[in-house]
Length: 116
Length: 114
Image 1 (tube, each protein chain N blue to C red):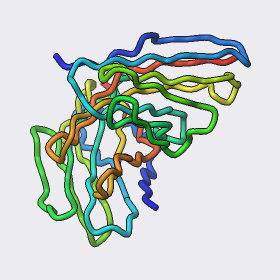
Image 2: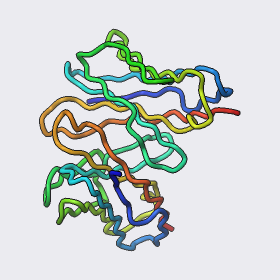
Image 3: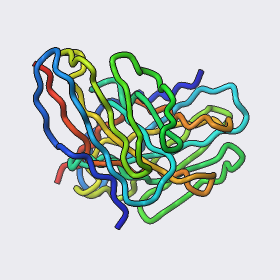
Image 4: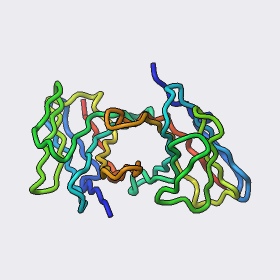
């Protein structure tokens, strides 16, 4: 069975600080996909990134970066120079690559508050 | 703009009522999903559908059923609502294939069962 753990329930940082959201996953499959989604106060989850298990390259998109390490089964998300608009609940998720298996297993989420 | 629309943002029902939650997507997506979101539990999959009239149970299907008569519409049904079904319900859709891994979500329906 798959599992995603986001140990940080809530984080608060002052604007312009950097912040890292942790995600640890468990799966026995060798082919899988990892995701991050953002849920702002409006409630609608927004896709941020997808990573497959064969691609361990770190990724940077503007102020966002992701660190994927298979050795520690982690897929951490860093926001650099945080802004108030980054305040949201962030979910990490995992999907294994079985044909017909459309299930996405989500973590419990990390609520990030950026203090102006 | 692509859109997943859930019919109600807030809903209050009484125990034992039959409840319909509607979801419509305008992206011609094959796959549609119903999740519930509870504090401390994250999102849990109730049911999903990969085609019209097809459905698959998710992780917590008990007490729920679904209907997908048309490609764009996926309904979640609570046959006899109970207080433990008070939750935020999220609908999502996505296309087929590896290149369409992104889920598009609706804004959610906060259901309160009294």
